[in-house]
Image (cartoon, rainbow, N blue to C red; front, side, top):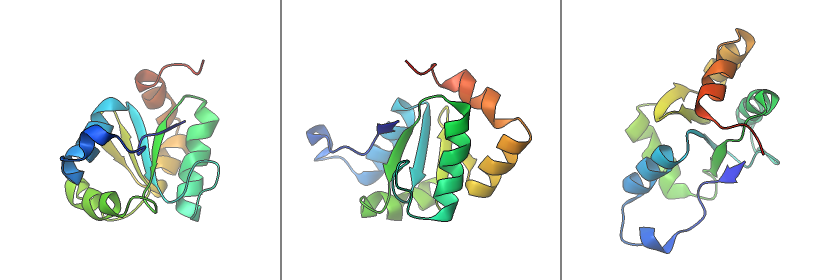
Length: 120
């Protein structure tokens, strides 16, 4: 798991929207969530992390509780009002319910495996 929100001085002059778009482009699998994978701060984020963790491939995350600008801006970009938000291959997959449903149907694993390298 990679914390995709680590501050980068190169972003000092860029807008939050640009930062978000760069995060999504850089990380093939990224979860915008409340908390961290080790310490999720809501049940919905915990369920999304659990599904991703069971697949066993690396994913990046952004703790929106520590990044209020991202928390405020991402729903407008994504046209999706709630968190967590799972993005794979630059596309919004959805929130916790969709992630869990796809995982249970066996649809999430091949999508993640196709977009995320095997864990080292």
